[in-house]
Image 1: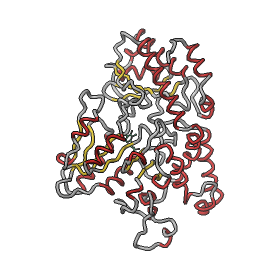
Image 2: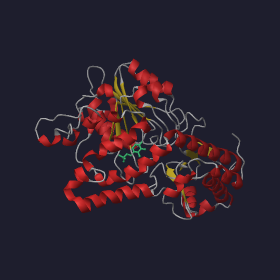
Image 3: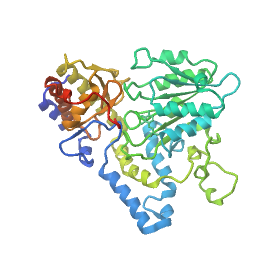
Image 4: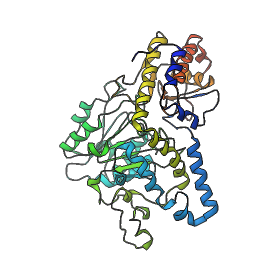
Length: 425
Ligand SMILES: *Cc1c(COP(=O)(O)O)cnc(C)c1O
């Protein structure tokens, strides 16, 4: 596909976009272009409505909302798991919507990390999100081991990407468990999950993935790939709202594995209210729930996830790839000579859903973008992340953002700001 570098052409692409109508369903702040859906997706009218319905259930039904609500709270996590499942390529019973990313990491690592004999180490990487590393370090400490020795982080050769060869080489006989991101949060690189899973299993190692930056943006086949477990958030690409409840996947071959962190909501549903002091865990991924679900942080997902069911993750991915390709082409064409480097993989099968634009003045270029109504995010030390989201961004948005970047550089507007990050970047 060849693109033209005019706004008229961007408008033409928008006219033939099969997902164009979804934009109307979101609350977009007039005069702004939102490019931060990979940090916090926007509110849709459907998500707002399903939240208001759950509030009305509480208002009108009190305790009976658990069984008689429009979306009965007692089975809401299961209802949402069925909507999450196709997005990760899991069977509905392999998926649960519960906890948060970091809590689910703790749950799954508690469940699947059993250092024994010489196999005592966890293998991760040096580019992953810090919360994952903090969680893994504390899990190692809880086993009475020293993270400095038992957490191995594969290095990156260039500070941007991981090489699957390096990861495979690090799968040594002392590794008990591997935890990696599906998509790196800075460079947007997609790891070859299928290959890494096969290589880990060939060496007798369990492997799990953090899907925060891919779920809702790219298709997955966690079941078919044989991934042991995965976890993700529902507030980035899935638009579930700030702090919305996360998701987890446990492959059915592990059903029956006793949860590392148990609580009564992990019980078989028909047994939960027996109030017995010996737990009967659910026979599927439901076992890895802990306590009472955060209903008001689940409720927006009812509306939000139905949009994905309708739109289909393959169409979302197809548009996302075109948006990011268009953005890269425009950057190459329009921003030459301004010192930008595209720091994400260019290949379709390796590129997640955002552009990682590197520049020494990135922090203040982000501030200049914001002053002009564009919402990017900044990742230290030098990355401007731009996420054109398939359900609510347009090709015209992409064109306007790149053209604004050109103006900011040409007029040196960024020089009016300090090159430091803000508290929440
Ligand atoms: C956003 C994100 C998190 C955040 O975890 P929370 O528990 O939801 O705060 C963790 N890991 C990755 C890779 C992320 O992108």
